[in-house]
Image (cartoon, rainbow, N blue to C red; front, side, top):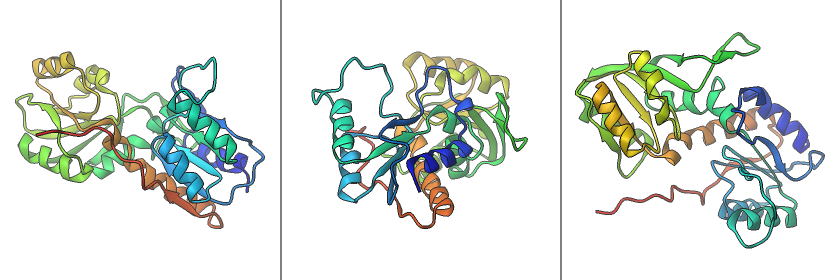
Length: 263
């Protein structure tokens, strides 16, 4: 099997046509013709993850976030991304990713997040299109939980996502219809309101967005970028194992959320 074969499969799960225009997805480092004997899957292609790939003998790194996001004028060892690119090239490790296309795709980041939180009757909120199998796709998901007070749901989210803490605002309503958007999706609050959701779980929420949510009567929960997206890593690894049973596939063990809580 080659990098091209793996990339082709990943693109059946998350077609590049589903990505946002500003995004960078696909094979970002290495050779499409390189043979693949072991794969490491992670949320981020950080320098430590690249070293773990080499230590484990992986020749392909598959991540959600892109190795190269903004255009670069140079690749040097003067910054983390440059060091990662040079390290991967030196050790013959290719790197590919599926980012916003995996956020939007059926079975991707936000379907996995909805499943992790135990949402029922999950739908694509504000669909952006239909895939080749006739399935709706789009960024957010919405589903239901048994009606419960916000503190009870907060405890559930904290446990299911294994986070140290949550930032939130109480919109003054019990939790019943929940929208989810892994990563920085708080600017999708208008779509959440239009769908009649009482609660929104996402990450990277700004100060004014908490105020806006409270003013609109929506419970807004910031569970962290890493925690809301990382569940897809194990799912993606499982799909790669099923598609390529002859290739060992591991999830990164060194990569953790770098955000901590004090107090």
